[in-house]
Picture 1 (spheres, one colour):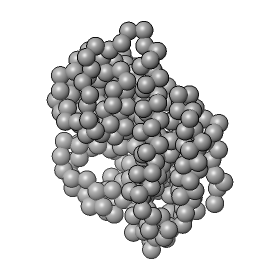
Picture 2 (cartoon, rainbow, N blue to C red):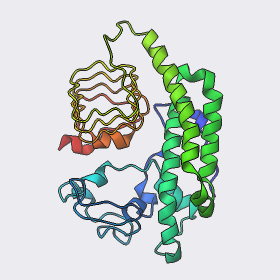
Picture 3 (cartoon, one colour):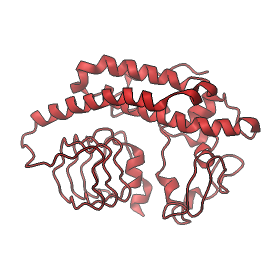
Picture 4 (cartoon, helix red, strand yellow):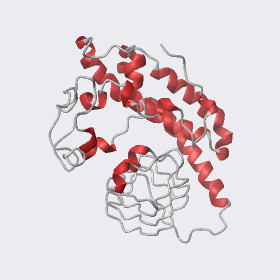
Length: 289
């Protein structure tokens, strides 16, 4: 069992490596544990716990270099926040489901639980680096430690874990950190936004025309931004936790200091070389296709 990670040494711009997917040290868990249905994102149906037929014996993808061309666009979007290598190397001690077939079903159930915990670690680590969240920094640090301890639980305990309840506790801190940070940024803006709309959580913005919109410091938590036009929009200090960015046009948009933005969201969007991203994220290669 590996020792716990000291997250206090990381900033929002530099999340720890164990929160980044490392496919070389994973047992192909996203390719086996997760279900998908034939759609624009996947060329076939696959049930949960059924290994994809493209998954090779060494747990590598046989069509990795041509996933999008062969109808598996969804695979190029997915990000596990490092849960794959945690389950493979720590929870199961490096013993894969080929070596121990009896562990396969349980391992495939554990993986989605771990993925949720690692996503929370990503958000907490980011919030810990925000100066304006100082009043609740100790609470964030304590919750981060608690969450990391949960990732070290044995498989049986992970499957009994009430992740929804824990997520609720974490979300209270994340929401407060967001409010403190957005208010601090708003106070220091040289030019205040004009007549910004107050979007509620889960706002339906599917296909919305928001080209060039000033969305600084707004909350778009859980917003449905599917196929919305955010090209050239200013999303600095906007809270984007859980926002659905599938096919969202963010070409030329400024997301350089957006809050709680993830690689998963960026991978699902349509951007270009002029899209400004936080330092902790990278432009996906398919943006250049």
